[in-house]
Image 1: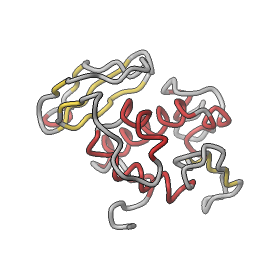
Image 2: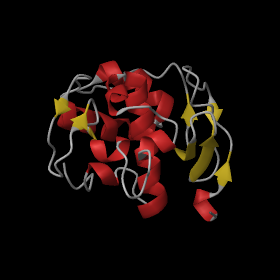
Image 3: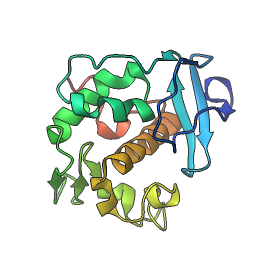
Length: 172
């Protein structure tokens, strides 16, 4: 990879603490976190400040966790998706989505991502070290790690991180 998707190790996403006053360089920096088995992880330029107040939103209870895996600039999109997909409910479950597979929890992550397929023998999220079974998606931390891995996959392959959730922002 090159250009704006150059590899760099810079953020420990496995920890449960948010970086404080960390300035990232370049318009988008791709980072890799081997402890999660995720690669690459993309963060937008900005200073991350732990004292940031929760903006007015539909799912404010998920703001702090979201800031551990995404930049503040993504919060409006995340908030929109969490509300649209699950009404902010970690227990949300759709037994049969439009592709015939179940969807899980806050982001309504489709079973495609956590089941074996012709593309991923163990399942995409299993191969990236995010979870063991689809039911792990009901854990909030696992849900955000999974959303992050899928976001990065979309950004890396197609240049659109939120691709798997539709053509956001056009879906608003």
